[in-house]
Structure formats: structure tokens, C-alpha cells
Length: 367
Image 1: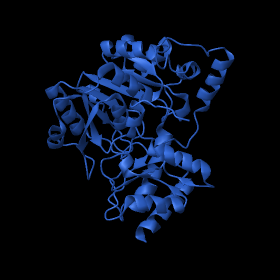
Image 2: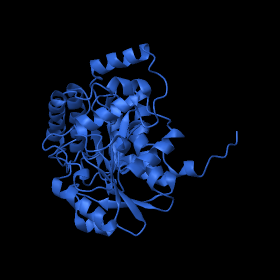
Image 3: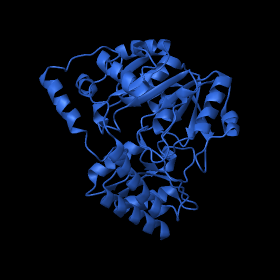
Image 4: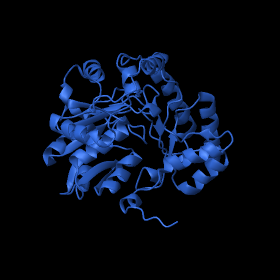
């Protein structure tokens, strides 16, 4: 059958993460250190409220911008009512929020700056919409410098994306680094897109939002990771009112609204105590670090649930293949970077399985 696909569809690659996800479905008992999905369950109170919402018929469209109650509660419980109801929209996950942000702010030929390594979506969605990408080098310690920011800037750049805590590196940028980006954005009159989905996963200092230091910011956040509800697709964006107006107009004709039962279930459950889970994930972080830091260049992850060890002198693609042959699923670094000298490990996994997996990786690296 001959089918002519759009030129646009050829501008994006199938996610390397999804390829491993599909591979895992075909393997017997793999050790999956590839997928960024929490290993704990959605809180029971949210499960029960979602069931109640379905039973009460809360399955129809909501307002395009999301239910008033959920928006009010997010602003009051997380942001001390710093923003108005006209400055927030509920999105279909943070991914949906990124798509709406691009469509509202960027035209074909505009440019964005992203920090390398980067979350895979940023580059792929830019290619899809005809947005040029300028990468800011942060290797080898994944830190932001004024020199590298200026080196990557060009006159087409309209926005810069920052993700802290970071996927794939697990790095939480320091307050000085955040201020540096804010000063740079102000100098060049840029919009900052701040992806803060992992802001509850921190193991040392709490992350600092760039919105504390700069006004032209789109804050993107959600509940997929913190509440282990990745499939329920509820995120939100907070931004100046004209941006939210444009995003709402576009959502009306694309996503329509975020899932209604998920919104209803979250309305009264935003003050979920995350401390114990954070402590559990700090233990997982330490398991990975202790196993690999002496035989790779591994920066201590200070947030999210990823490690990004650099494999000096090792062919990464061959190593990933060898790892998969030994039942351990990991992602090669070039999925997230212009370089291919690292691997991404997700430590969102049962501790015993995680120990087995990183010990296999250690033995393979030593061999």
C-alpha cells in the first residue's frame, strides 16, 4: 500500500525510550532501568476519589482551562496565590503543556536554547514545529556557565528551556545558576520555559524556580511523577495572562481539556506528604552512585530519579547492546544529547532489582 506521509512527520524520530519500552514488553523478566516511571502506586485517597468521580458521572468535558477548583487549589497550596486564575491552565501532562507553549509562543524559524543533556521531547518537538535548536554545553559536570550561554545564543532565539531537577542527569541547578539564566534571559528578552515536573524529587537542597527572579516565565509542572499517575495526564502551566489565553484557545481545538476524572480526584488531595517517598528515592540514588561512581564519571544525582554516568573510552552503543543481552535495559546518551558518551539509568525501581541491575552493569564495565 502506498501512503504519502507528511514531511513534518519525518522530522521527528521514534523515541529511543519508547523503543526500549517496547523491547521490555517482549523480554522475559528484564531489569528495567530505562523508563522514567515511579515504582510506587498512586495514593489510595486519589484512587478512591477517582472511582467516586466516575460513579458520580464526572466524566464529561471540563472547562478548557481546567476546573476552577483544581486551579484555585494549585495556586493557593503551591504558589501562595501569587498568580491569578487567568494565569494558569490545566494541561494533558507536562508534555501537553510543552506543545501548547510552543504553539502559543514560537513560529517556524524561531529558535530555542536547551541545555545539553536535555529531555528528548525538547529537541524532537522543536524539529516537528520547524524551530531551530541551539544547545548549551554543560559537560562534564552538567553546570551552567555564562560563557556557554552566550556562545549558544543567536538572533533567532526567542525562548530558553530549563529543566531542574533534570531528566536525564538528575542535576538540580544551584541558585546562582538559576539567577545566571534569569539575567541572560532578561538581557536578550527571552521567554523562559521552566519544566519543574520533578520538583518534589530532591535529595539535598530544594530546587529554586527561575520564576522567583524573572517574569517572562512559563512554569510547567504536574502530577505524573509525584503522585505516580503517569497515565492519567494532568499537568499545568502558569504564565502571564496573554500566554495562558493563547494556550487555552489552542487547547480548545487540540487536547480539548485534561481528563475530567483525574482533575476531580486531585482537587482536594494536593497536600500529599512526599517526605517518605523522597527518603526512599535517596536510598535508590545512593545504590546507583555507590555501584558506579568509581568506574564511571558519575555526577551525584541531586534530584529526579536518573543517573547519567559518562563511560570514558567505551563504545556506548555496544555497551547498551551488551547490557540488554544481560537483561538490563538502559538508554544510550545520544537519545538525550549531541554527545554519545554516557548512559541514562532510571532508579525508579525496586531496591533489590535495582541492586541486581547496577551490579550487572558494574561487572560489565569492569570486564
